[in-house]
Image 1: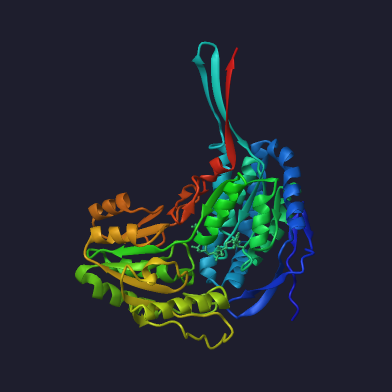
Image 2 (image 1 turned 180 degrees about the vertical axis):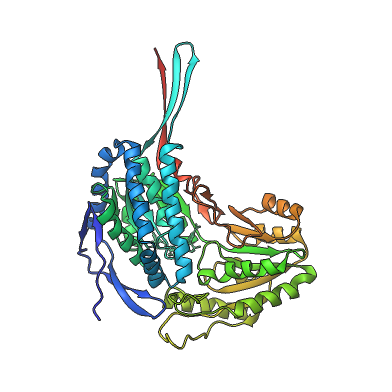
Length: 485
Ligand code: NAD
């Protein structure tokens, strides 16, 4: 079957790309191609950025409450099309439909949060009579055109960490979805184009990969980049943005540890920990990756974790009963399996092997079972590097100090860390001493609500201002006016 080629959305119109580089995108549950995407040329990038640049002056001077009205429309139409968006998300990513519904909810939460910004946080500050006859005030102004570069694993939620805020604050955008999962954002843009009717050029979508991103960042029209992806690419993007003097908010990869203290209530802890490691088939930047046990409680924690994990129902993203869907692509499947091979070679003990998992109804799907390692030591690659798949490494430590030391020194990442305990003192020590941006206390996936910044430290984040609400300061600059009358 001939599949359609996605179009770019530039200057308020859908456009066929003239690129000769056209690649397929898949439904991971079945392995079938569902669409193809063009990799935009430099000329197409410049068409998109100049359309945003042309749209910016009148958008920036549109009253903020007028701009907020577009977001009210966007929120309403996303609520109406909630299930359709969730299905597109699952179809292209492979995460379960239940997980996709959660993603869409968080995207809408960010629209809500940006609407609140229009009424509160975007206000300036004034101090009358700071000196005799002198008043001083500060206003936040939009800056121009930003680009948003997205990863594959939250095809809709992550673009909406940025889009609503930039729009309400008066900036114009060129968004580049992941080339692996471009379909959900294409679907959302169709809905926005039909129902929200933003002024042409205010929100553009362009498809492509590395070269497209490089052209976007180096474009004279673009003032800054918000990026989410893996750490090696994040570093390159941050460097490129610096070379071109651009603002940058750059989220990288992760290697998250979850500590289960001997006093944790395992009845509530185990389901939360299993869902952290294997929800989204482990492809979440907040997923647990290292299970850190303390002293003699190791065997009980690991046995219960293994038993609950290996009984997860694995299958098509669209079956309501599925608890873990496929991974995103054939190459992700083989990369994750090679990480398991490597763990075995390095001497860790593989106690659950998900490498050859098959789902009989969908032989072409990109399925893996859960893999669990025991006896992982801090020097092993398994303990240090991101795998981004359904693989758990169990690391034994002697006590909480030892566990915190492992988290802070064992990996270069600082995205999330969690502790499960019934001790307030242990929880407090943990949150104060662990060097990570998002901390879970009896929570397996410590995902900040839309009206909090999405944290990240060390190799998990480059920049100063974070995603979600922090973008109010990323997408604006402060101007101070001192006047004497
Ligand atoms: P990726 O780094 O491969 O790609 C991300 C984006 O960068 C894509 O749009 C891609 O087209 C573009 N890109 C790829 N190579 C590039 C290059 N050399 N120069 C410029 N742009 C380039 O990431 P992915 O595999 O799509 O996503 C998974 C990664 O994202 C994981 O490492 C995960 O931890 C991370 N992630 C982080 C967060 C966070 O908030 N810290 C959230 C979600 C995902």
